Length: 122
Length: 156
Image (tube, rainbow over all chains, first blue to last red):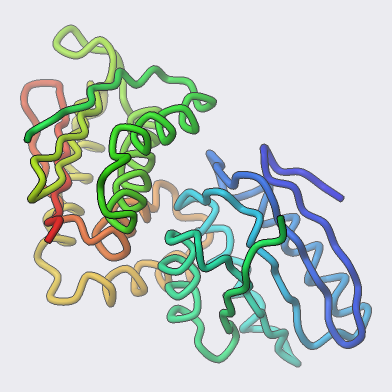
């Protein structure tokens, strides 16, 4: 488990996939620290031979545009990887900002990013 | 009925969650989509004030107004400016965002620019987000040493 400000990141390796569960609030003054943590996750995914990273954002209350910028930087790096790593972003339908922001990330990199919505665990 | 919430924005990062809570409570009876969009807009603008606003004689503390009249929502930020060039650059960006035929295409384009220039400082992605995701129209002006940014959206 690691933290970036009020954001908690937990990794769970699964078969052919790395699960990254984020919770808390991603309200960051700069992209650097979160981008480093995300890069670490993709490095570990490659070591495990995973083709997909599933990022569960259902527990994220808010994400500012700086944190979104960190995701943009990370996704751009994933796009350049050979073989490419795909990203499955999972949001909570009740969090309206996620519906908008996760779809924006998918529009930015449609071949790399997919988006799904599931009810948040209580 | 018109009602306004006025918040003074101190340069404290930790106050942003409280600002979001106050705005959310103020808009308790507004359509949830507009409410959440306004919370995001207020948070992004307040963040701008914390990052770039400076205390000046005309504006000691940044001020954030959230006003609704039942038909529209307006969020206004007034913050002191220490670097007029930065303020001018923000105004140019607001103008470009306002002139875009499709704000969403512009927003995704800004993400692409950021991706190709990771070291780019002051991406101001928040302004693009306010326009594209929040569906707010943006306007800005510089009055003396005070930068005023206004975001407006319809509630219908």
